Each structure stands twice: as structure tokens, then as C-alpha cells.
Amino acid sequence: MFKTENKEICVAVSSLDNLRRILDGKPPKGSPRELEVLSKTKSFLGLASRVYFGHETCARRLPLRSEIIKAYSLCLSSGMNMSLVLPYAGERDMGSITSAMEIFSAVNPGGEVILNDFGLINVASEKNIPVKVVLGRLLSRQKRDPRFTEFPSAENLKRDELPLSSFSVPSFKNFFLESGISRAGFDSLPQGINAADVSGFDFDAYWPWVYVTSGRSCQLLGANDARKGKYPLEGLCGKDCLGAVMEPEKQGDFYSFQKGNAVWMEVLEPGTLAGNFTRLIYEPVVPA
Amino acid sequence: MVYTGCMDIVVGIDSLKTVQEIKPLVDAGAGEFFCGYVPPYWSDRFGYEISPNRRPYKGYNYDSFEDLSSAAHSVHSLGKKILLAVNEHEYPPERMSLAIRLAKETAPLNFDGIIISNPALAFEFREAGISAPLHISIGGLANNYEAVRFYNKRVPGIRRFILPRDVTVSEIKSMAEKARDDGVALEAFGIGDPCSYGDGYCPVWHSSTGPTFCSWFLNGKRKLINISDSADNAAVSDAKSEYSGLVIDSDREELLNVIVRACGLCAIHLFKEWGISAVKVPLRGGEARSELISFVKQAMDLKLPEDCQKIIGSKNFCAGARCYYNYPSEKNV
Image 1 (cartoon, each protein chain N blue to C red):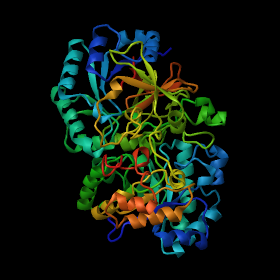
Image 2 (cartoon, rainbow over the protein chains, first blue to last red; image 1 turned 30 degrees about the vertical axis):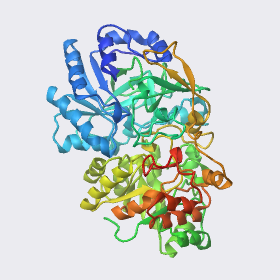
Image 3 (spheres, rainbow over the protein chains, first blue to last red; image 1 turned 45 degrees about the vertical axis):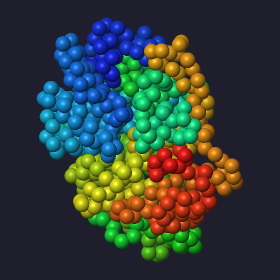
Image 4 (cartoon, rainbow over the protein chains, first blue to last red; image 1 turned 135 degrees about the horizontal axis):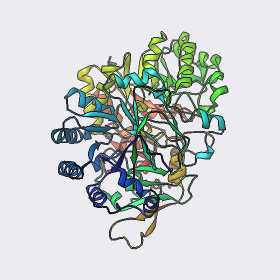
């Protein structure tokens, strides 16, 4: 299903509850479809030596200070490393997310933070926060769509062009190398990834849940509130997403659903991943 | 560099070429224009589905140098500025090479700026001798002021940053204050062309060959699946549509749904007060541009949402998914 030799296996978890369950050998909580996928992939849980803990897409789901400290403690006790995953940030979120980074660096100086936001990368540098920055998969923006067979209409483009990324352009790669960043995340896409010509960079492959899209104005919050439609940013959030996921009635070639403020698609059998993929980021359930 | 004085209105165009066609937009208040160009050497290789900018639709772009040249010349002869959008998120090697070729080919047209999302383009353009100022598109992810600082520290030649759609009015105020202190120019959305998710973090297919992903995912029937601990066999219910609760009880609202689609007019006078350099009216592929531009122009001097509602001719239009900034918060519903 997914080759693991010569790769560091990491498990992606967004909640302390699910982290505890995984470390205790219990299945994490998820939707019926996620649990169905888990039943096919759970052997990877036993191979993990690192935890990617945190949330990529929603600042409202940022782990609490106590949760970050507890998560790190649990990982250490289990003999695992931990990387802190942080979401992208609006202006109002910068303070809290920066604090999360500082808290983590206090308990784990030099530890990795997975960042999906240029502003947070700048803060880490400007404030000399002792963390090792890794680019999250949200900053690698190859085209993807659950209706994969429809786009693009030319098969040669799908085969040859869609797997390519900007990292194959030296100036793009060097832009990040010069900021001290030498690892980046990719989703394991249906078309695969072709980063074979990229040297000097390590890559993470996230599998089997591919990020599709997200927004700070949450479609899931707005799904039950007909007055508001897309939920306003100023609106209070009761984290309703912890209790529900949203599916389209008609699926595309790949199963997709919204969990949290983001849409995800299930890709159990991605295309070829060519390049220096030294980590597999295994998602037992969507880390959202 | 901060634009002092009036706040410009930046309008997307896609087929207008002559002074006669463009002047009505200028008369309505447009001070800047932006456009996309898909030359034959690009479309022959990639079609329009894989575009050099964020509008992968044939009708939304100029596809001949002659037409593009006419448009640029006409805008300049009217004393206004025109920008070129080369703002797709990803440029692997061949697409990067063609983007550079496109920028070099259009350099004699003296575009007043190039809108980009991928930071590597800045370095590649400079290397190729292209010196037009750069505007960072929403795809460039300047979603907070530290991201603005990130770019200014590392990327040469930036003149302006375009703020994303999904920001609050108070966030715009915070960023505008910092921008003023630093002498940085910001641009914010004013009216038209909403986005169901967040463009910069949306790598999904944006193609013209079928419905956009967000339309497909959100506008059809959807199911909410209860996954809480107390769920009884993961109960399923129907999710309401993004627009289902919004009242459309007049022909005017029906028209606004089509031509305006999303509105931030009531916040525009604040943008002007805070020193935002430009208001974006993304109308490539859209209609009734003069009317929408005049809405924005009038809104610069208005204070109350009720005044904006009079301009657009509808009170009920102000709500939910059609409101860019939900400003003033909660008072529109």
C-alpha cells in the first residue's frame, strides 16, 4: 500500500484525546468513513516514531498550552519525538499561535514546528524562537480535486505536469533554504509527486487523507445556521466541528468530506512519489 | 510606498480594448485595472485549464498580444494604471519558463505592476530584467502583517499587498495601522466575486471545463453526519445551503445575486480612513462593471450600512454569504 523502508514514520494527531488513545493502543475517534479507512491502514500506527501533533487549518482549534505540554510529555514517555503542527493565522490569531510556538520551544528547545503560514515563519525568525521550521503541506499547492478524472482534460498534462511542484525551480527552493528551511510537506496525491530533481530538501508525504481546501469562514459552522450562510469570522465558535462532519450527497472519483473548516479527500493509492521523501506522515483519521 | 490621497478602485478587465470601451469604467471611478494574458504559446501547451493566473477560463483573459496591447494603450491614454496578473500558486519549471517569457513579451506594454502569488517569480523576473513593481496577490498568503514583513524582508520590488477576502474589519484596521507606520501599501476587496473558502489555501481545480469545486461541493445536497459521543448510529441530517436562509423577494435582489454576488461596501469608508491604498473589484468575466464601480465610489463617503443598502437598492442583500466582512457584525441579520 505504501512503502516505508528508509522512511521515518510519523503519526498525525490533532487532539490530546486521540493521542492518548493511539499511545494506549486504542483506535482514535473519527467518522464512520474514517474508521473504515483506519481499519485498512492501522498497521502503520505501530511503526511510528514521531507524532505530528496539532491542527493545520483552524486557529480556533489551536491546542491549549496545557495540551501542548501534556502531548509532549506523553510522547516522551512513549519514546517518541513530537513535532508541533500549527495552523495558518489571521491577524487576530498571531498572538496565540506565537505563544503556542514559544511554549513548545520552552519544553523542547530546537524542536520542530510544522508551519503553514509565512507570518509565523517570520515571527519564529524575528523573535529567535528556538524551533526548527518545517513547511506544512498547505504551502505545497499542486492542483487536486476529488473529481480527479475530469481535470485536466489532456491525459498527458495529468501524467506529466500535475505531479510537478515549484520546488523543482531552484529559486523557489532556495527562497526557503535561505530561511533555514530544508523540509516541506506534500499530500500523497492521485497524480503522484515528482520532486526527483530536487536536491538539498527533504519531504514529508501525508497519507491517506489529502487536504483539498479550507477557509477561515467555516462552512461547517454555517451549515446549520441558515441566517448566516458562510459563518462570519466574528461569530462565536462552539467547535461544533467536533461533533459533525459534512459530505456531499454525490461523491467524485475520490471520497471527500468536510471535517473542521477544511475539506479532505481519501487517497489510499496515490500516484508515484518521486523525490527525497524521508518521512511518511500517517493520518489514522483526518487530523482536524 | 504608500499611495497618498485618494483610495484607488482596481477593476478586473478581460476583453475591453478601446478607449470607448474603457472610459465608462474610468468615469465611474476606476483608477487602476488588472488583467490576465494567456498567449498561444501557453494555451497550445497547457490549454486554459492550467493557467498563468487564477482565472483558468478562456473568456476571462486576453489571448492575443494585439488585444492586450490595445487594452494597455487605452488605459494609459486615459491616464490610468494597468496591472498584469501572473498569480497562479504553482510554477514548476516549464510553466515558470513560460511565465518569464510572457512577462518579457509584455514588458514593452509598460504594465504598472505585475500581480504574483509565487515568491520565486519575483527573483526570476528580476533575473530576466523585468523591473515592474510587484503586487502580492491573495495567493501569496499575506494574511497577517507578519507575512507582509516576511515578504518585504526577502522579496525585492514589492509595491502593494492584497489582503484576502476572509479577514475581519478589525484585522484590516490592525494591518492598516502597521502598514502606515512602515510605509506599506495595502489593497482590500470591495465588491463582487466571493470565495466560499480561502483562495490562498485553495489548491483545488479552478477550471472552466466544469463547475468549480466549491460550487459542486456546497451548492448540491449535503449531509451532516453526527460523530459526537452521544451520536446514535451517526445520525445524518441535511446541511443547509450557503445561501438558503437569505431572502430574495425582489427582482433587484435576484439581479444583485448575479452581478454583485458579494459585497463589502459598508466597510469601504473605513478603508479610506485607515489609509488602504486601493479597493479591489474583481470583475474579470463579470458584467455591469460601471454600476458596481460607482457603488464603490459612492461608498467611500458613506457611514452607515443603511446608506449602502440604498445605493445597491436592497436591504435584504446584506447578509451571510453575500457579505464580505459581516460588518457591522451581527447587525445585518
